[in-house]
Amino acid sequence: MESIAQGISLLEQGHVDAAISVCEKLVEDPNQKADALHLLGVAFAHQGEAEQAVSFMNDAVMADPSNYERRFNLGLLALETGQPELAWPHLQAVVHQDPQNADALACLGNAFSQVGRHQEAVDTHEKAIHACPSSGPLWSNLASAYLAWGKIEAGEAGATMALKYQPESAELVHNLGRAQLLGNKLEDAQENFLEALRIDPEHVKARCNYAVTLRRQGRYAQAQDELEECLRLDPNYFEAEWNLSLVELSRGDWKAGWQHYEARRSMEPRVKKERCGQVWNGELRPEDTLYIDAEQGLGDTIQFLRYISAAKARVDQVILRVQPKLIPLLKSCFHGADCIEALPERPTDELWAPLMSLPHLLQTGADLLAKEAPYLKVSAEQQMAWTDRLTAEQPLKIGIAWQGNPAYGCDQDRSIPLEQLTPLLEMDGVSFYSLQKYHGTEQIKALPADIQLENFESELDENGAFVDTAAILPQLDLVICSDSAIAHLAGALGVPCYLMLSKTPDWRWAHPSAQWYPNMRFYGQAQAGNWISVAEQIKEDLINP
Image 1 (tube, rainbow, N blue to C red):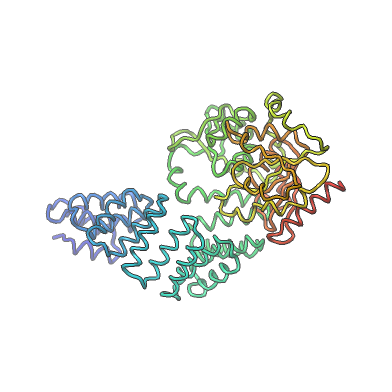
Image 2 (image 1 turned 120 degrees about the vertical axis):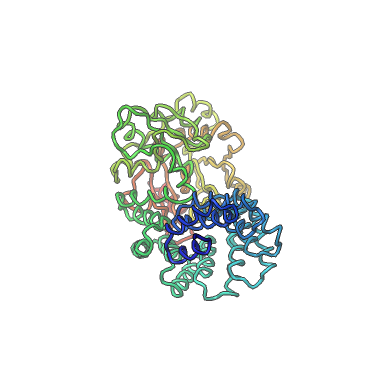
């Protein structure tokens, strides 16, 4: 006769299907129903069937809400499968029943982090540490909560405390390296990733992040070797595959790079959307409408618009769905799509493709980079609204942008302290216009009094991202900017642009074949962190063209 003990024994022996068969019969017994449902959840979790596992565990809790061990297991599984809203009530019930349950507190803190409730996450992790102060993993959880909040120094401090209690843990050493990587301490991070690999040579996260430090140092060949080893150890480690794509694109291996760039579509939380709708694979569909969805930042959207026309040649119509704030600009300046709409709030069922997958789906290399540019055009009427504001006494009119969005993970590499551009701004015979909106404009006040930099911030782009900026750019002689959306806007409009790049630039600028815009000239750092020499070189070239 079947029993729960028999089901557990079969599961422990690896006979998952047999254990499921036993439990399905036991569900009919009211006295064993809750145990059987819970064990079914465990069995399906073993098989990687997360949705069914959560469903059975939830049914088990509904059958007997007073079993807090089951509620904890359900909360843990819900958390692991990206369902923090389902996890909360069960984890909170466990904590309410046992306020000193450090494991439940830690899971609850992780649930808060997943949905951006950072203060509650930190507070909950601190309660877990109070219940068990010598636990390295609990300190590491607190560190992760701070890092998710963007508090890098506090995150590094927490990760350091974790190692005080568990110094030989590869995972905790890796977590310290991760905090240092986020804090741009590449050498310290590299040292800790190597230490984690000494402890556990098969720690794929440490190897992957070690490769990230190599890539950011421009050591592409070594980074590629490490990432390929990651994928040998775990062929389904999509983060390593995505990082491999960045290395390949940086080396000009466009075909392999675009192929591996698709790994981002298998990474959480994107993977949930990828399960919806009909995903276009680049095939001819001459009678169908294709929806192309923007992704990532505004600059990425502007940059990849160049591929729309090639996609349109394979279908009947293209409907481009973009970030709502870009709609006014694109409706007035971009005519490559049949319709432009806002991105939907929820996944839909149409035939669709991600915008940044088009190079792979169209099987392009470097051939389509500059071929399509310029592909934005501002009407004379739009420009006239700003013409009177741009009448300057100086013969040369230059727009300047130095700061990207600080929320971008590597912003410290690309954004430029305005004071380091002083040699350029001191030039005679030039009228400089700030193209900054929001971020970075506070630095203008700190410039020397004799530097004149016209600031339009309060009037710029109030009716949509870059609407006014796009009207200004064609009326300038030159744009000088950091690696931000302004660079892509200038490039897409065909406006001459000098792009200031870090010593190891982003993948899209790293290789000589990366000629996205024929009107763009690159100025790279000779030494990491030194933008003054970049400004001086541009000044010299303007004086002696």
